[in-house]
Picture 1 (spheres, protein in one colour):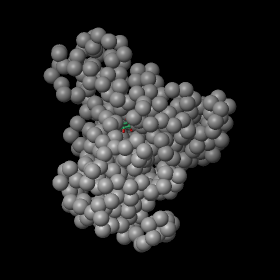
Picture 2: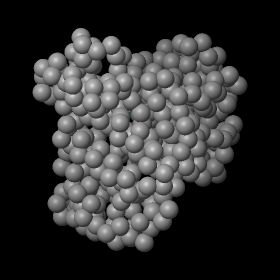
Picture 3: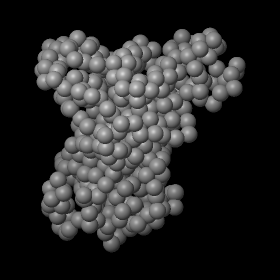
Length: 386
Ligand code: GLA
């Protein structure tokens, strides 16, 4: 991979790259739509992700090229005047990160030429955009010798997504990518960013991702709408409870007070946020106790809640999950990421994986009309230099 990126850099920019770098994608095992509600999440970084070859240049120009979007050619921007431009498409992600870093006082004072190549399927819900953001911050750190740690990189990348791209996402994606640890998932409390690594000890089972191939962009999805529905529900609950976030509530406290929300839709959204947070805490305890079956049951309950109360699944993801649950050797299955398309994550007994892919793939194609893609994945580490 290193040589492939070096060669492409030479071909595009006519000189040698200074380095080749990598940042992973992520999959969330449980804890969905909880990260902007002060709740817990349990994602892991993947071994697939985004690679880039990069070098500083002598002026103030940023030149970005993606091997995944060759038709867009080299996209250029002036480092001193970074603003979001529709025509810059994917390059708005690295631009946003560099803008936020500069605004925060990090001395990125010269341009860079960067070639990117990602092996995460785009718009699949495995966070290809957060991977590009974290990777770009990591490259700036390496090339400019910046004193910026990985938690800060996660925060800056989230800020870029919120303020530059305009998607009000939580911290989960950027945090899990920046802080990934091979073989582990991260149990993160988004209320205070305290975290703990938990080994993914699945005994004789594998993590299988199924991509629905229904494309979604967070920006044009209902993501921001869900977030404001939760905020409105919280505001109502605050009239009777002394809380800062939905993540502080137990199921019982929520049940006792839910009637103050007075809007059936917002009540359902808040219910999901509260129960999903509690499920996540229970799921991590189950995994630690080696109770994979219980972990799987909580995954299934998570999907049902995302389908019925949060309403972010849709026909494609529901078909993948119900097909998965009709198979032998499936311990749990749910949608992962923002929803409205993207991927599901399933825990499948090793011996049943081939049949799972064949059968779920068949059912999906029959029902939806086009194919799903499957990936058997491992938990990988955070950003590194090749
Ligand atoms: C997207 C966002 C995350 C998180 C998930 C839903 O991936 O970027 O912050 O909210 O959706 O859990």
